[in-house]
Image 1 (spheres, rainbow, N blue to C red):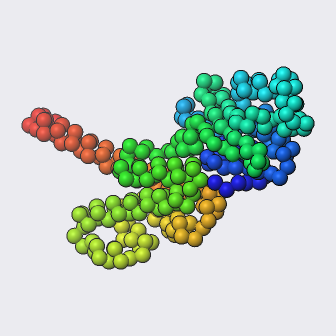
Image 2 (image 1 turned 90 degrees about the horizontal axis):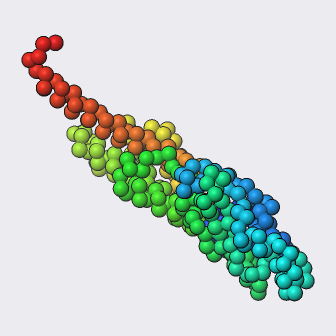
Image 3 (image 1 turned 90 degrees about the vertical axis):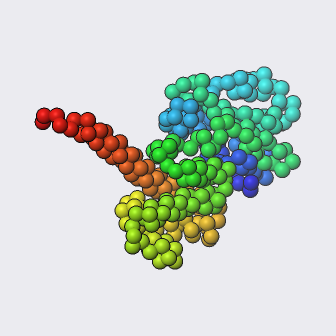
Length: 290
């Protein structure tokens, strides 16, 4: 993972940056100040984010844990003063340290990030965290159990890849989710419509395929023909940083599409169930006086 300058805010390094992101500076004093902000939570004492344990949005607060108490007491400062002349550098000893936050809804729900400071390269690297970045993604509004297995798996894969910083790959999986929805709709159309032209469908451009499928496609996908081209452009032309900036809005768009697809599937299930029950009632009451 490529090193970033210290312009990468501590709060972003903690809660947004993928594993093995590094921050660096030519001056040890600057690195010490940065580490101090991480330890004390000066730039991120309270952070609004998702809690995977509560499964709700929450405010994360810097924990007053043993590590926090130890590194902020005069005893540690006096001890480490023997190692460094500059007090700002005290915050880089020991070289490995953990920053911990607690959920304001339930203090037992903890978020921990592990860091390692390389004194030779003057880099501070994020080497571990729990829960993972994928777990910390906000819960989707989509009822995943209503999606087909392939769409469910690839949507999750997109989130996992993004959490590790593989944003172009995440674009690829999001694009596959859209393609799978269109492919499934085409199979349905082929089996139910005698005049469905499969050869024409296969050779058509993607936007034309959507038009051919009509109401079988989620309305939002039909109304936003630019969604698929943007995903394709990201896969083939954009760099990782550009994809990272665009991912939030694209995930929202995909969630809307998936929510519509899931809702349609659920409606079809309810319709079948009610129809069966009505037929049973009708059959069981034949001959009865109305």
